[in-house]
Amino acid sequence: MTLTTPEAIETEPTKPQAQRRAGGSGGGLGRYVLVRFLLIFPTVFILVTLVFFLMRVIGNPITASVGGRLTPDQLQERLHAAGYDRPVLVQYFEYLGNILRGDFGTTSTDHRPITEIIVTYGGATAELVFYALIVALVLGIPLGMLAAYMRDKWPDVLFRALAILTYATPVFFGGLLLKLVFSVWLGWLPLGDRASTRVELVLDRIPGATGIYIIDALRTGNAEIITDVLAHAVLPALTLGLLTAGIFLRLVRANMIGSLGSEYVDAARSRGVREARLVRTHAFRPALVPIITVMGLQIAMLLGGSVLTETTFGWRGLGFELNQYLSARDFVAVQGIVAMLAVIVAVTNFVVDVVAALIDPRVRF
Image 1 (cartoon, rainbow, N blue to C red):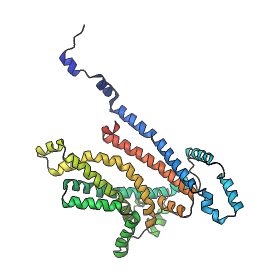
Image 2 (cartoon, rainbow, N blue to C red; image 1 turned 135 degrees about the vertical axis):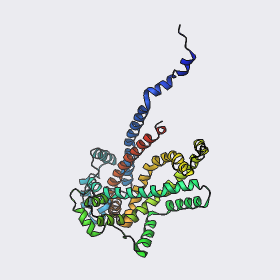
Image 3 (tube, rainbow, N blue to C red; image 1 turned 90 degrees about the vertical axis):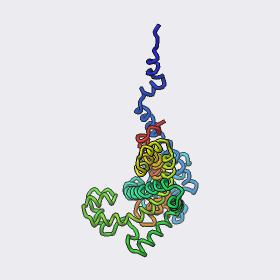
Image 4 (cartoon, rainbow, N blue to C red; image 1 turned 180 degrees about the horizontal axis):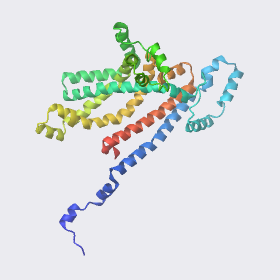
């Protein structure tokens, strides 16, 4: 019979602890990444299904787009050729099969593959969303930190009011207001478009152009072209970025208030750590994780807001094209673009969740 000493009892790990140590943090991260990756498929499936049947509620796409300009016989011939005279479920399963093969359909007005539209105009929308995200982070995070530090004082009240105002203001109204002030009254910035006509001609002729103007402009090495591209991006980026900046401001403020009242911040303050360092390091880092977590949702919001922003400023991206196809009642194009955006949003959320799990291990469990 063996005796277990008190020292052995204290040092011997319990079974659950041993299992956790054996599994390690990598196992937890691996499971988390796998689960989040597998969730992409039902998410995309549900979104694509909703888009498909919502489009069918208003009728078939052929009748909606060109029905008034065709005779009944011509319309019936078009419907038969496109397969829209078959049962809806048959069309639905065929549509799912096409998506699995990477075929999101062909527009009925100009007969262009949806994938070609995504490739051609997706870079412009990605560029705008990137600019808007920078604006949201640059404005929302510092102002949220300051609002938390000045809690219940007049700067805090002012910033909270601004956050509500920016979130509640319609995107198109904010864009028109910015154009009126900075383009019409002050004449500081261009009214719209992604670049001046001369610069667009130069960028379109660059071998292997990416469609992302700032990258193509940097490749030219011409400071005038780079300045022109950035000047055209300021107002659209502000319009779309302010929509999300208010959310980041309130989120940072709420989390930092909790962090500033925590015991470890009080302990650091008692050790003589300067207030600026307390706010910047001890309180801000724990408050950063929720921002990363919701960033995926905000990117989805930015993609939705890009439709109105691009239309307001003539920014030729996916949002602008989507609005054009809506006006033409080309619901095949609308269905394909929205389905493709659903895939992009689902993948983006997956990437953001993985980044959040790498920064904060608690997210994995």
